[in-house]
Length: 112
Image (cartoon, rainbow, N blue to C red; front, side):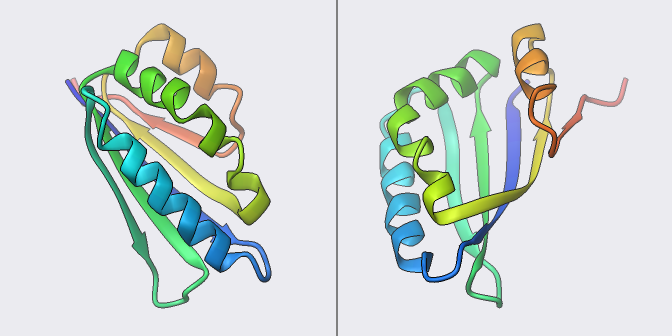
């Protein structure tokens, strides 16, 4: 079962252009990842609010993405605040454990 991620971010005042550049760099980096099936950014009618939709073949691929993009991901806070993080799928114990440290994260396992 794939891992599906939806995150909402709001850019900080005056940081929209920098964030857009960073989001495009993240998307380009994700294109080279064999376990990443989808990594797409969207902008709301309010041009400072963004959504990223990510899909990975499994929990290991999600961790691999974070490792591969660690430098870029570490810079997100310079430009935006994440306001929502939803992770759907059959999560590994390691991914569940990591998500438990993220206060805004919500997990959604499959319905049995």
